Length: 267
Image (cartoon, rainbow, N blue to C red; front, side, top):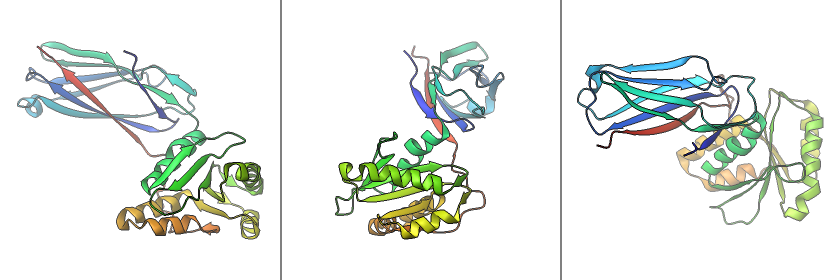
């Protein structure tokens, strides 16, 4: 069977959590050997579970992690590599593990990261993308309104006037066709230039801008208080939407954890 693929992005730390279920008690130590595809890493990862930790157990867990190289070719990798599990009597299991689809950081931010945060706050999100379509169409499933947001996601070192004109110009092209009355810009940038704030304050359309860390702050507040109306009210604001301070160690590209269940022995 062809391993399934998951979306990841260059530079992302990958955690693989192996849960090994045995139909017997292994003999002595258990060794997990992971041979990653050569374009991911040329080093084998070997984990040994000592006798004392597994002697009475038929379920064991082991986590390995690595960072996907950057730069890294964009595209599909059918399998991350091969896994071999052995005990003192020899090899018990050998197979390929799942594949990955490596997409650009900008696409990952737009199609995975931002929709997940909005979904956590009760929004139904439809990632669309393209030059003539919204990045995301979102509406709250808990607030009694049919109003939708066009959510434009930008991952760039500097959000300047050119980027502003690109986002708002794109929105004007289809806002009537899509019947979307509100534009929400979610940006993750090191710097938003002064000209953008000037344009934002004089915009005729209802346009709001929120930095990604503030979107995360809003989600964290929602998890604590569950106030759907406050979330909707905040994201419906025009102008710059501010929720809290940016953490010193803030990083939008979080590690990705994959659970890998393995059953060993059926006789």
